[in-house]
Length: 133
Image 1 (cartoon, rainbow, N blue to C red):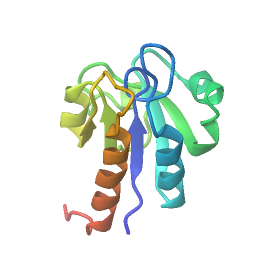
Image 2 (cartoon, rainbow, N blue to C red):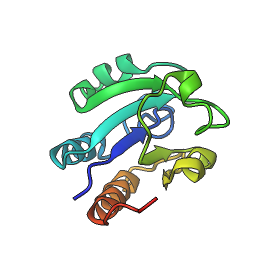
Image 3 (cartoon, rainbow, N blue to C red):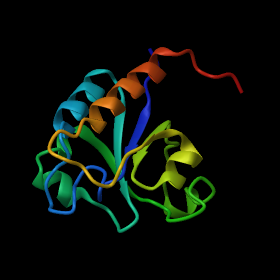
Image 4 (cartoon, helix red, strand yellow):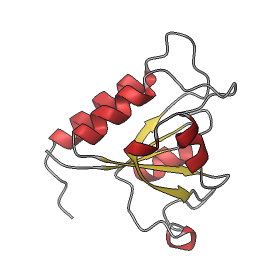
């Protein structure tokens, strides 16, 4: 089983417009860390450590980065992102297109299951043999 570097966006991905967490965040974080995956938080508006602390999620997070707002892969070094994302979860499709991952809608209803879909997709990817360069 491959261990993946999983990068989560914050606004409208983990935390919705009303400041509440999207459904299943803590469960997904717990399962990912139990599976040996590494969770990173990044945001185009800055380091979001306080948001994770406020929702009692900081224990699951390895590091925090500022996310480039364009030229995502090409600008990682400029933003001191020293880890290559293996899987990103973001409400901006361009980020997911650049790295691979899950484009999550920026609106969640009370029955939202998107993060459970994210978990399934990560576990499926981790079960595949690594791609050869």
